[in-house]
Length: 185
Image 1 (cartoon, helix red, strand yellow):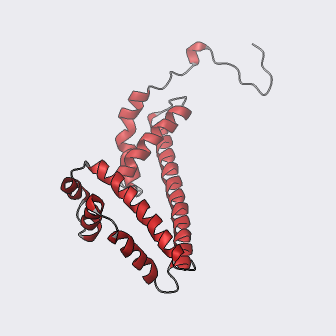
Image 2 (spheres, helix red, strand yellow; image 1 turned 45 degrees about the vertical axis):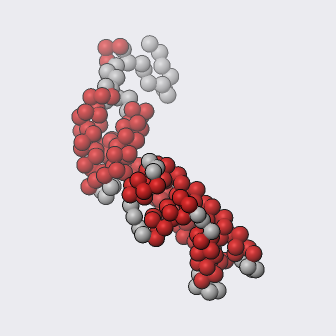
Image 3 (cartoon, helix red, strand yellow; image 1 turned 90 degrees about the vertical axis):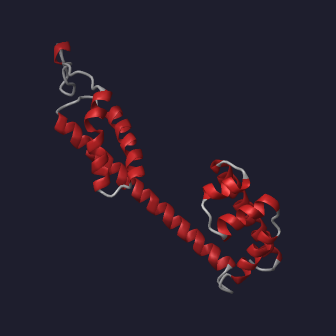
């Protein structure tokens, strides 16, 4: 068998390590990785998502099983990296939202402390009727739970969620239109 100095010789078939068994790795390590994520600060629902993502990365990159301790260490490093990346990305999103909110406040509310904007919103809400008005009054005015409001208007919770999204978008357009009619923006 000839090799160049940069090539590793191929392993004979008898020396090739067995392929990792994904199910066995998950069974063996999922609880520990989940607990580790919780210990470093991930909320339970985020830890569940990161756990799945960790194993997806592991199965893509973990070709040699190695010792149990080495697999566990790899999974913890991967989970930690994913957790930190998510926090960093969330921080960037939060910063962008804050910058957007600042620009919107300066454009629409700084001169009068938001009175003009709030008057426009109240006017737009007053123009709602029927089920739309009932939903806005119950959910935002009375601060009732989504499930209660859904039952009140005869919708499933997901249907109410969709209706609320549409109502918020419609109210946003209405307020933008009112502010545009009132002069400078």
